[in-house]
Image 1 (tube, rainbow, N blue to C red):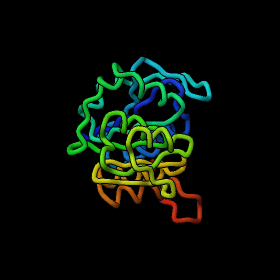
Image 2 (cartoon, helix red, strand yellow; image 1 turned 90 degrees about the vertical axis):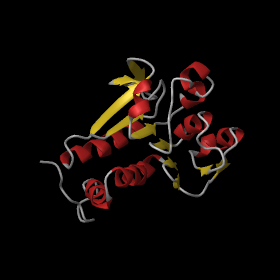
Image 3 (cartoon, rainbow, N blue to C red; image 1 turned 135 degrees about the horizontal axis):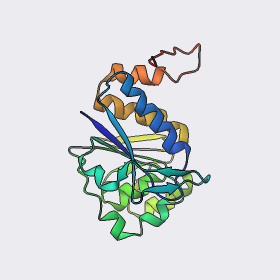
Image 4 (cartoon, rainbow, N blue to C red; image 1 turned 30 degrees about the vertical axis):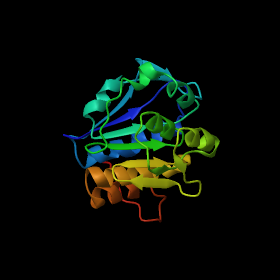
Length: 193
């Protein structure tokens, strides 16, 4: 059984959690054993738009996840300064797929997993990411290196999650999931029962 976790924190960006959540959960129509969980440092976190979102578990669940996805939002600037928060992670990019949306790249960088590789992030976080010693790619919405990916711009989540689904499963699963959200007339495939 494969497991994906979406990491949230206070002041996360709503669409950067709910769009990946929806896309990843569509995999369950193909592989019923696939688990998707939202995790955080608390039992719930409040989004930028004010939604209080209960977590399914704590960030320690990232240790055994096949896919760890860091959401974005202004809250990233706080958690990257909190060593007690960062020390709760024990990720292994040789064995796990690790990805971020927009400023979630700051967390991956603070954890030391962007050393020596390039990444992208939301334009308001370019300088902060550079300050963490990362080469920032400003003109690409998706940057991948092995099992690590960073994406920029909320709708880049479609390509980012597609990339992760293909790595977790295969190209057909990715194509079916992505096709299921396409506008009618653009090759949509229905995978919902």
